[in-house]
Image 1 (cartoon, rainbow over the protein chains, first blue to last red):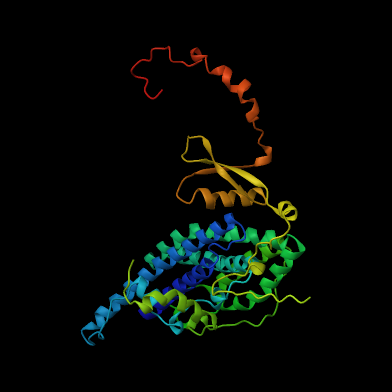
Image 2: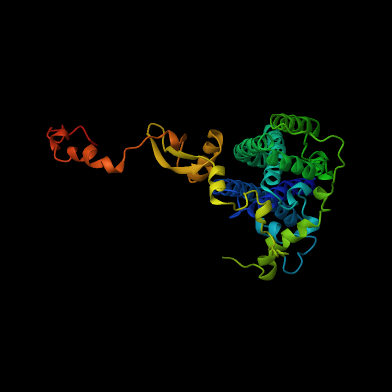
Length: 262
Length: 124
């Protein structure tokens, strides 16, 4: 029961952290100064959200491990879980993020499309977590994050419209980005075993997401793909080859110099 | 003549041709593609005036407001944003500043410093 809840929170945290890490690669490379700042602002929002979720997951993990301490003595070098150990000391197979967020950056259009698809999913899911409120900590994190997410949806949605309904070149690039990323959107609505405990209502989540995305695509004169093969596995730890490289960079310092601080 | 172009990419580096930005072109072409300049005015608190904060580039008013939000209000500087395209602002010519502003210099009687203020009136 509790393990499932922890896994669900880690899934939310990992998806947010990994997208933040991907967006962070734009820092200093944005198409114009203003957009460089905008995408890195969003990155900081995402990493902030990931921190709240990791802190909560760490708290739950430590509560469980204290209960079992009397029976099994903790392994040597055992350290209490923290936001840092969860982000820096788990392996690729332990990460539960969507495949969507680990895909490498190509052009600006692909980056903002990925942000739009993800933020829209986040928006409707967090609404559910906030309204259900059965887990007060999760509901509070959702409520706080929703203010940021609403802006991310608006910002990225307007970019999708601007580029889709822009020049021939920008439209071509957006169509290409949709073709590239759409096969990773099926996973957003494929329940993982640990999600039963979170009572996510996928029957409501998917149509809400699809309507928002279709509305924006229509305004952007872009087509919604039909009958696409969907890649899955990220939520349960089977990732594309890209995540390993990301974690190598993300975790390098803690792996090389355990416990280092600055 | 064959030209071989060798490009080296580093991990996490985004090549220019896919980075969203336009490739460097001739200066004249580039100038035509620049987004227009916008002036940004921010109100820091309810009840205060909007003050000029700076300028930025944006394709349209919506983008200008979002850019202003990201560039100028990241540290809680504002509660309201105005943007106006810079081309709509008409300015005085610095060459004419003599005739425009200097005549005011020796007319100190225009400052309300000759009134005695009651003590109850602070902050004037």
